[in-house]
Image (cartoon, rainbow over all chains, first blue to last red; front, side, top):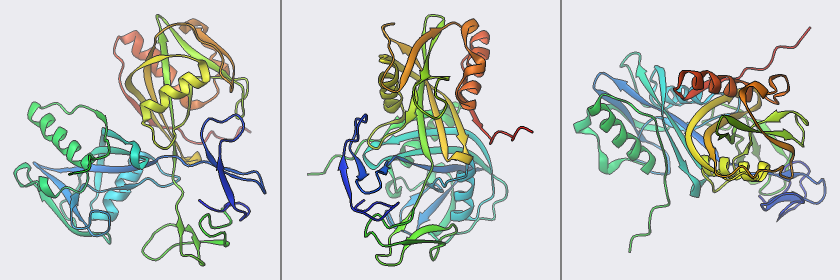
Length: 181
Length: 181
């Protein structure tokens, strides 16, 4: 942020009086601009013993597989956003189920919120930002081509839980991947 | 938002190509400015049979009671933010426990995320944005002076769960209060 979104004057980054963190502050109109983490909401979509994955048609991680998920929008609920993303990315109509996972990803200011969901009919197809949609059995999951660590975690937990016949809620934190030497 | 925070030119509100919702778009530098819901993170702080409430020293709801909670900051986790807010608002050191409630509040673009937490020592005091801090038994809870519907919901569920000896995770949506005639 370089300019005030309220008045167009340049902003400076400093700790406002009474605050503890640096903010973008406008000296012209005195607006303080806060920046906060965003939620990524999505679904683990079940169809019999299969789950739905989308091959990403946009960066980052173009060409890799993920569950349908995206940024929650103003005016919607977490589960409403998850259902919308699932429809947009996979043309998949779902009945949303329980909250399944919440992953903090502090180094990119994101929180992933994933629900289990039941596919209402198997007529799915790639949305505008998706190259391909497929219903995978566990044996078919392309573990080496999963787009995000959070989704790899969620799917690992999901299959562990399924083997035990008990789907628990999972919470965790995804740290920045170590730089490979 | 009236001006581009990247280049300072005026923005217009319209649906960008390939998008489905109106965004603030800069015609000078082509930046698209997304606005997303924010998370409010906090703790239901337990000390024996009491819980900690804070009397708000800031607007909105100045002078009413709530649990320690506030906007999650960039670079932190949900539970890290909840612990920080509890320290800032009540000078209360806690061990954070399980996720207790997630409330969607779509009409104000917020998601409340509340954890149960155990007070490490009862030496608590009002932080800068708090008028007073108190440890309440259930009988003492000032139900008519609770600041927010989300917190009233959470505390109602909390005491129901406690009577049943089983703290469940609660998810819900807080709708806009009907206008009183």
